[in-house]
Length: 279
Ligand code: NDP
Image (cartoon, rainbow, N blue to C red; front, side, top):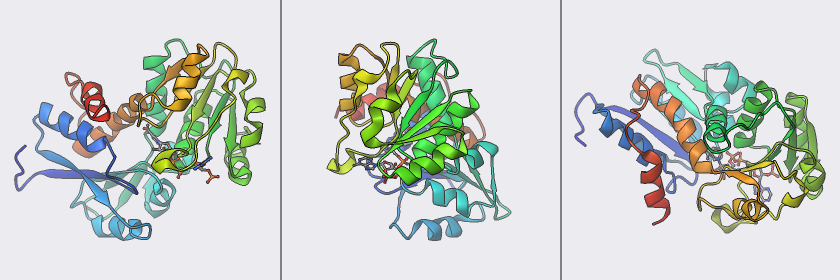
């Protein structure tokens, strides 16, 4: 990779950020497409996200992917937002215009639906309710995308008030974690959008046997690729969808927003990411 005076810079911001696979995906696409661009991680303190966004106004950086825990703040700091970011009340993409404006988008939902299309062929979001675990940025993107695709959403969260607020936005129902079995009855899919288990904190033990045999189980967490939730789902014979497929699915439209064209199709970024995940 050669950095020139015209190199277009984009990146990803979150906390923690060192584990992110996004730089691997985007830089592989940039190299394969011979685009004069680079994609770098931005590490900020919990209070530093707003300062970073203000500093980048003016377009010296083309755009940022935003990850945990800044997606809601990202939407609040933007001047304009796409309908899907507004529906999700969270943004995972910020694009910086040369006029100083900041535009927010949310491609998480597209990534999620792309992952289901790829790994659970024939899954119909409108056929049965979808249970989403979590009520943070990832869960919001998922709820917005599934609702848009015709699904009835059930939100299950540790903090019930947050589940109730999110469910209300999409005409869905809210459940506390200890009533997950009830939320899983008759579902077409279960999606884990909690950060439980990250950084060794907590671990969810889900009553997946309460789901119908036809249910698809998806985990947004992709490290490890086969999470304990996906392993438990497989043991029950449920079809599964992994978080890496979603990560790649949300990265593709992000790449287009930053570099002006879709990523090249002839590079196997999943294989690259798997090499890294498998150490
Ligand atoms: P947020 O910090 O916005 O939300 C975290 C959610 O997890 C909250 O609902 C929180 O519940 C819940 N939670 C955290 N710890 C626990 C615990 N110990 N037990 C039960 N619930 C818990 O995070 P995001 O929504 O941005 O991300 C969530 C996960 O999804 C992360 O692991 C992230 O990496 C992943 N993700 C993956 C994507 C992909 O492309 N594969 C895309 C987006 C997210 P409470 O409200 O009670 O605090």
